[in-house]
Amino acid sequence: MKESSIDVQFEVFDAFHQMPEDEKQQAVQFLHRHLERFGDEASAIRKAIDYALKDIPSFGGFVLKGSLENKAIGYVVVNATGMGGYIPENILVYIATDAELRGKGLGKSLLQKTFALAHGDIALHVEPDNPAKRLYEREGFTNKYLEMRRSHKA
Image (tube, rainbow, N blue to C red; front, side, top):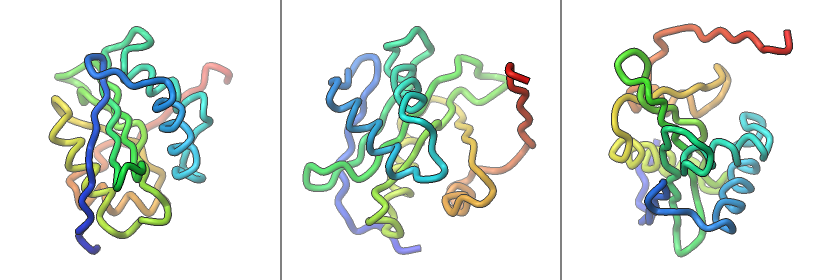
């Protein structure tokens, strides 16, 4: 993979550094578009952002924005779990880079900045056929467990 020679500017939003409403909408739209088939509905993305910013009662977290020449090129949403000691303290809920700029090391830059910001361990969910899985593995994520879920609708 090529290393990023692009000078990305980072901006962090959390309970202390609030995200304006128009910025929240931009983040939701960006993630919804660039996560492509690996994403969720816009309403779910918005809820994760609201949890990260403590706009909904939660343990918080943060939203990381990467920009190039004042244009968003990537976002990360991390929710704190409040459960350190037996599960990771953080869940990396969403990460996406601009589809037109992939392969330039931007995802790696976003992940490394996320590691510097997060307090404690980080978990994430990734589908087996998601190409980003290789990046996560290179950056130290391992597959320790098989996740199983049961829907309350079952």
